[in-house]
Amino acid sequence: SVGEAPPPDVEVKNIGMHIGGGPNDAVTKGPIKRSVDPHMTELGACFAKAEDQEKGGDVSVDLRIEAAGGKAELKKYKSAIAGAAFRGCVETVFRTIEFEKPKTGATVVSYSLRFTPKKK
Image (cartoon, rainbow, N blue to C red; front, side, top):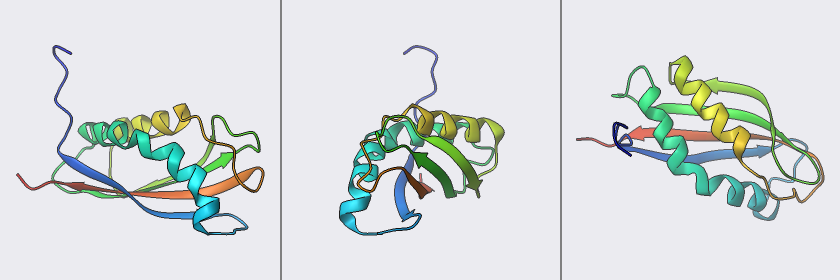
């Protein structure tokens, strides 16, 4: 839309997912991966709010997903990327995701992302 900055040229990828109490296999991680993957572009757009867009970094969030799935509760946020607005944006994206039903009932997952600015 008019007046909005173009999305930053940044690659966002999942670099880790740890399920509290396990198992940490592809089948258990599948529903979480499928739930977050469609939101990578939105997460990338958050990078426009980072204080330093020259250097990337990793972000990890701990999410509690109830047995029925749906919206997750954000338990913890850790980031190498500075900026309160960036943090707020990332948290908002994670809060809007409708998670698939986890394989093993209510699940706490640590989900890590790497933001890598593309060289101009």
